Length: 467
Ligand SMILES: *[C@@H]1O[C@H](CO)[C@@H](O)[C@H](O)[C@H]1NC(C)=O
Ligand SMILES: *[C@@H]1O[C@H](CO)[C@@H](O)[C@H](O)[C@H]1NC(C)=O
Ligand SMILES: *[C@@H]1O[C@H](CO)[C@@H](O)[C@H](O)[C@H]1NC(C)=O
Ligand SMILES: *[C@@H]1O[C@H](CO)[C@@H](O)[C@H](O)[C@H]1NC(C)=O
Image (cartoon, rainbow, N blue to C red; front, side):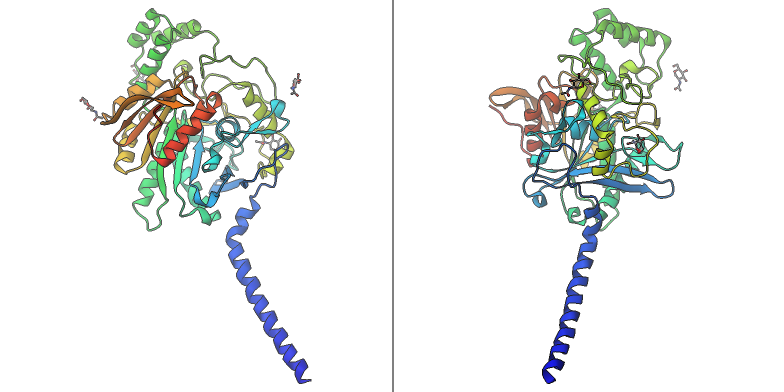
């Protein structure tokens, strides 16, 4: 009897203890539960990998039902000791899932015809945790529940991206103390510095700062005036247009007014376009894709999304065949299910760029003032350029950067990968500039090893390797 009673007490005590353990465990799990719901088990046609992946939606505006889609591919080794790198593509309106993740720096490339995935051994997730954000709303899987709420601009994009980071870190609290880097290319030359500025402003007023350490942008839009002059000089110096056309363009086009071209300027722009011919503007030394798949919507217009006179800014993404494989792959229902994407049944197909869906109502003329603020704020800043791009060419970037009047720390020198010149670099006080020789608008596509080397040097804050 006594024994039974003891047993009973013991059982009650054990049950209570178990209750405590279970409830403690479940409350500590509660933090991770949301992120667990975002875990990707496996993507269709995916090779076996050792790293973890998560994807899903973060609401950035409850009232209007605006949500951004992200895809996190964690670092291959010791992700807990690696920084978080957020990647943005440009456009505006192009998807980081389509470009950054699937053909540039992500762990997978898409197989021909979207039948599966290949491993990218030069993926940047060999050294960092990578988060691809489809920004703004209206791009890729990111949506709004309020029809007609697809008006966007630089400012709204930056504010919603900041909101995304707050909400995402709430969902992934283990990343809260982690070093964060913002990276991207092309029109992300606006998104990245503008978000960095939002973060710096937020940090100046809080006890819980976002641990932003630096930014890196490639073939980045910086300054409307100097980018355009630099673009014309690139076309001319690379024998894409005639001397006469260059001179006329410089005389007839007034780039001090954004997207406001005289008739004369428009007609000389058309002549320039004809002189260049039907080449791959995004890398003038590689062929264009000549396959054409048609998936639902009409094929994306190569020319830009919103500019009245498109020749001066073709920022709407790259047009190799890979992009079409992405379009097939990400429209597969099994892929969308594995990615936790399109849960609200978005009424149009997933496309690499959002074409005419977004209306871009506000755009900064120059990002250079933000560079000054970022330098003053002590951020690590790297700017790189694939030197075969004619869309945001190396001369555009150089003319723009020159306006910052930076002091040189290490003069221009060639940097090397495998005993070959990978490009050239100059280190300034507060900013490192580097070119990648032979790379186009999307640098890692044809120079994946060099691009990874660049990213490693950026992370470690060391100048690019000399011979
Ligand atoms: C891809 O699709 C095209 C057109 O349907 C076909 O000709 C080609 O053989 C396919 N390639 C592969 C690798 O399946
Ligand atoms: C465009 O340029 C013309 C001529 O310089 C000027 O009269 C007009 O006000 C400008 N329009 C806008 C919207 O800036
Ligand atoms: C979302 O799903 C619907 C129906 O399931 C499909 O018709 C649509 O193309 C998809 N949209 C996107 C953006 O994935
Ligand atoms: C850079 O220097 C030039 C000439 O030294 C000067 O005119 C210009 O205002 C400076 N620009 C900035 C942004 O400080």
